[in-house]
Length: 143
View 1 (cartoon, rainbow, N blue to C red):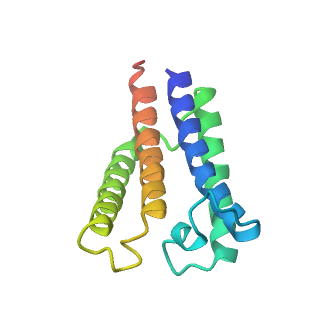
View 2 (view 1 turned 30 degrees about the horizontal axis):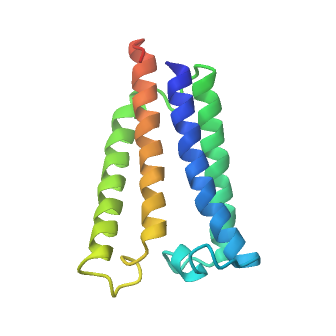
């Protein structure tokens, strides 16, 4: 069980790393085969603040993957239900953002930013995965 959850968590972390790395490349060493820098930015958060926050998130995701690999709880069973609800709401809001940005709100930058919205779905999936892992660990069930 632990390996499956840890592998899924690591895959989500690697997915998020692709997003962070793509933006770093476009900020410091722009290339033509990646989307333009403006496409990577989904908010007004200045990049000197965004990048350290993303690095912290990646570190957290690595820590989560390690905890899962060694069979330790991440937040515990008591937090799992609340985490799942938060993760699901986060996923639904970011999914709606993505769909609305691709359709009726394509002229509003926050909505019309599919790269950040897509990777917020990755982060929401990580939150729900943590919830499922802690719940499965507490129940002693396996995959």
